Image 1 (tube, protein in one colour):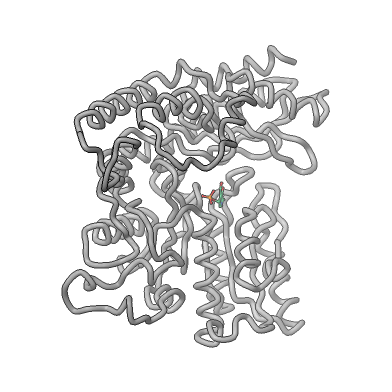
Image 2 (image 1 turned 180 degrees about the vertical axis):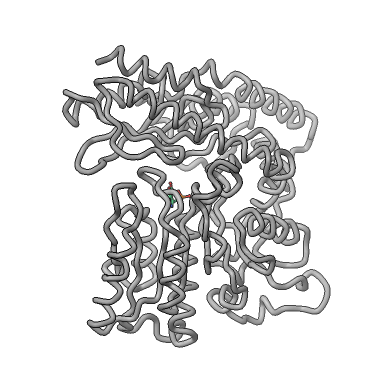
Length: 470
Ligand SMILES: Cc1ncc(COP(=O)(O)O)c(C=O)c1O
């Protein structure tokens, strides 16, 4: 703001207040009319170039900035608010969470630690998350940017169990430790093994069965072969809702094997863990509550605005030992602002962190688990509808079982490039935003139904539009 003298606050609050009210009105209108807008718009080159401007040395009036926001930023975002966005696995957000972000911004709380309400709200959210996913009441956890970080933190906890204090002092140091996950594991788990110093090849990717679930016989065989070769299995990372197809590994069997091997049992449930809330899909999550750790996102199926993921850890002492580093300037105090331990900075890699817990707390409080369960049920019912339509349409082929909320299908007589072009056309025309993947060597149109605004009409219109273009 160029009107300021000594502080960054305005000399006259009334102008800012009026602009703030307008912003809020505009954003509520934006949400209320989202269905009438294009799903996505490619960004014109001139607009892209406007973000290659030199570093400003003098200020610009915030009204001018807001005018630029409405013209050059707001139209060109990802599109995942829209009911016809079905790509990747993106949550649709919710208006309560949007407002919570405004409130949290106004509070500007640093939730790395100290004795204040942000820490207390986050503990409440972690306790609720543990209950939702069937973990014990003493489970600890921390909010993170997303499941990529949550999976990374879980791998570090598994390392803590395997190597203890030595792992902190000397690192992995050539320890022959091996981890196991399905071939359909998300890339971030492989990346987590890499970032934790084990290297990607320490993760053994176990083939999947016809339902895209980790083959437990092959898992046992891989473990036996590794042990015979002098390796120690330290981590089994099962998947609850795989990124490509939404497949669930058999969590109980994976837990049994981990127990027998004294290995850490982790579950990547980035979106699938939320199936625990759904009466119709809860059975898929059997065994989830036996996990040593779970990674999942609030920003996906729980519809909290980006970003917010979470790692839950059954043994709070292990999570604390993984991340805490005693330091004079962060010492626990019995009272005052330096009280209120344990602090989130001892449960994850971040020291300074924002008040993400507020938007989670407000979302869970506003909609309750019943509201979120309805979203999960609705997404799965819509995915079943889409899968049925694909089965009933001769030119479309279902390429993987649609057991949850993801449907992957191919188009007879179309090359891979033609399918990729069709999806890009749908996106660029602003009509639908599915994504693509490869299933058993075949290019698939991949629809992940996550958005709470998506309806049966959207599914029917997608199929009709694809058929119209063939
Ligand atoms: C199964 C699975 N694991 C992990 C991730 C990574 O989550 P995030 O994008 O929140 O980091 C995803 C993202 O889609 C996912 O589907």
